[in-house]
Length: 172
Image (cartoon, rainbow, N blue to C red; front, side, top):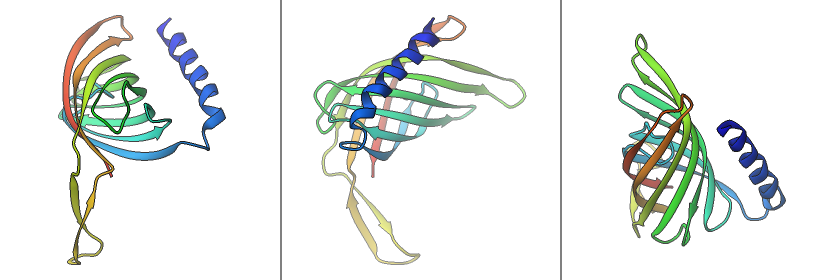
């Protein structure tokens, strides 16, 4: 039942997004560090490809990893104010995670619903060099934020749970 609901949600949102996909969307890359994540529950380090749909929402594909675990996910994140300010958000994703070692591990997959708060950090910069031993340059992040919240996880074997998360996310 949940699988049919997710497929229907993706089809409807895809049909809606198809009309304006060229006019106001762009792809960005996001990196997050911290204790778990709203995008994949099993993640201390995550890399996401974001499709900015409008000022309040984004679709994403993500890859997350941590010690003895990794996962991938697809989802949608909605900011109640907008993405360029500190805001409450709601994240909905479907994830596949592998937990344990290569010899003794298991696969968990299911729906993840995560309400949370995005605390935006203004004027954060990073430094880089274009060439080895070249001049040190500085640039501002497009977005730097701390995300705090709780994930409600519903796994395919009809089990579930709650997991808190706190992470730092940046977009270059």
